[in-house]
Length: 197
Image 1 (cartoon, rainbow, N blue to C red):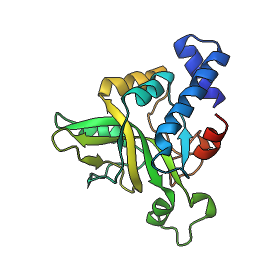
Image 2: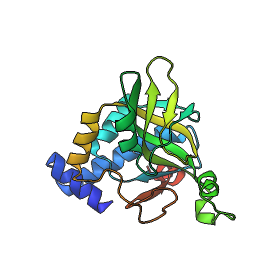
Image 3: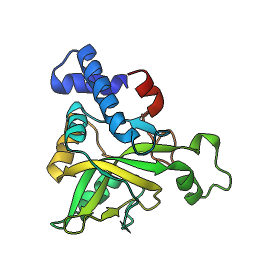
Image 4: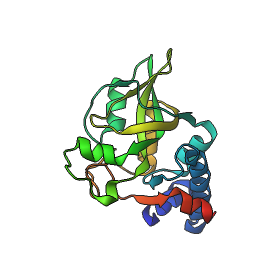
């Protein structure tokens, strides 16, 4: 989280303490919105900016269901997959998706799921929404996504987000929990965050 606060302080020309306070308050506001769907969930905080969090809180829309269609792209490359597939009808959404991590582990070949994967969690994610029907198209090949919360973006928004955090490639190889795409992440138990807010 320190790296993320430092980058946001640099990008927004803020003292680190102020950037940390702003980010903390925004994360609490985000978790309040996400908590209504699944109070026992975790939320991963990785490579988000103050601007993205503000946009999520102001513009975010909840899709409390699984994807209607799956167009399997490359694993852990949801942003890249969506940028390649989006068009006039399929619009990109950025935000968080609620993953049933146990289901993902089973789909990745686990015979017995480790305890640390027996949870649900909100992950930063990108997906497509059909402009006419409102149906969700998922681009991750192995998915356990059961809900989505985000806002419509375009390719320029994604590129500006990447530049603002000096992050490339957009979805680097996972280092922590390869099955779930966690990397450099802070896992927050939603109920604990809200209890301390």
